[in-house]
Amino acid sequence: MGAGVEDWIKNAGVLSVAVVLDVLDAIGLRRQAILGLTPRTLSGPVVGRAKTLLWVDFAYDDPDTYELELKSVDSIAADDLVVCATANSDRSGIWGELLTTAAQKRGARGIVTDGAVRDLAHMEAMGFPVFARHLSPYDSMNRQKVVAFDVPVEIDGVAIAPGDVLIADRDGVAVVPQAVVSRILAAALEKVTAESRFRDAVKGGMSLMEAYRRFQVL
Image (tube, rainbow, N blue to C red; front, side, top):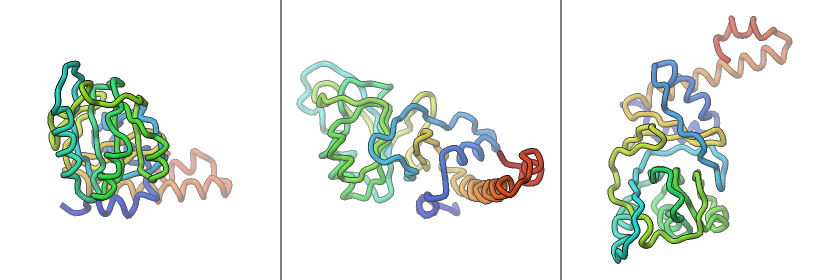
């Protein structure tokens, strides 16, 4: 398949969500951005392979609340970026220090969620990238649980499949479907180079119009 997540990680320092979305736009994939997920610890860019967890809200006594949650975290592989899809729920802090400890040990790159997290100071001290829409100090017991993992999920109408490449920074999160990861990485690196030339030319006195005509980026 060509480039894999390792190649994305190697180039993470020069990539950005904005550039990746630009090249996704160019091939007709125009709804690949998840917006409004605040970088709660590190600001990125963070790149990883999607490890999907599907959560639901509930309100009854369930002694097995944690069962699939624990199984899913125990199955994390190196370079996975955990994606917790909760339907934008702030009902509880579904991710915190203890899950982070286990995930980091297994080589996880971070977590992206439209839900809530807790133990923020601990995760920040651990250097674990957390992109989350909400904060909540409540425990998930009898409030939220994982009902499936390693399945396709959606956040804000954006489809995320296991194995897709995600890049997250202060602008948001871009989802790169697995089928086009090589193509998008190559195009993104080309755009980064062209933008650098554009920037240097403008700093050197070239007009924006002339720079755009020459480098075809903006």
